[in-house]
Image 1 (tube, rainbow, N blue to C red):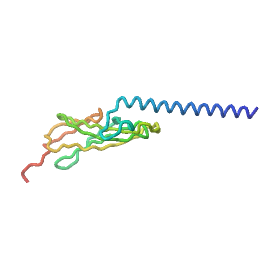
Image 2 (cartoon, helix red, strand yellow):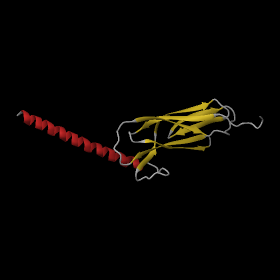
Image 3 (tube, rainbow, N blue to C red):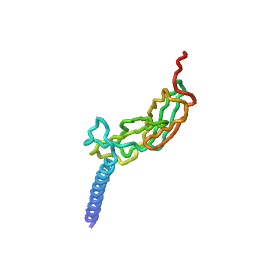
Image 4 (cartoon, rainbow, N blue to C red):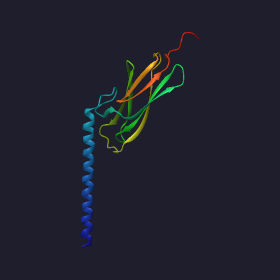
Length: 159
């Protein structure tokens, strides 16, 4: 009788273990399908082997370095969705008084990954030489901040 209870307990544990594994596989598959729809191709990356996207940003801080001409760095913090995703390329474009920074992500398409958020910090420098004094906005993957230049950021010809 005792061996029957042990056999039933082992069978139930095995069924739970097997069903748990198949659910996890389904979640990984669904995540790959869902994220690939919103992904943009990354130059030089074989998109059959990798999934690319944009990083989830929780905070943006603008650091104006005390130098002349002034240098400006943007420090973005956020999280990656799993243990296989890493930070990819960061691109910067300027439109008017706004800098648009896109921080990309990349992960192997078929990798089985830990399903835990992974924090990151990425620093990106902005090309601010030659800018006139004024207020400038920074948009990093939809999260915004601003900074101000109190003087024109250009070296004068008078030395």
